[in-house]
Length: 72
Image (cartoon, rainbow, N blue to C red; front, side, top):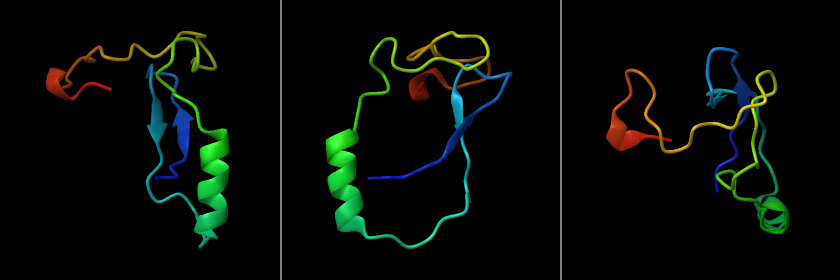
């Protein structure tokens, strides 16, 4: 399980991870239970939309300059 904060950039169709975001130690047993009860598939159609454009990320499509074998 990985907890990573993301934000949308206007110039990107994908949310971007924020490495080094502030964090603190947690009760992992409690978090694991919460994650199991509240998880969802972000790749499910319609699950995620850009907050400005309203478009879904083009999952499985290589963006300009990306290695097609490593698409989102």
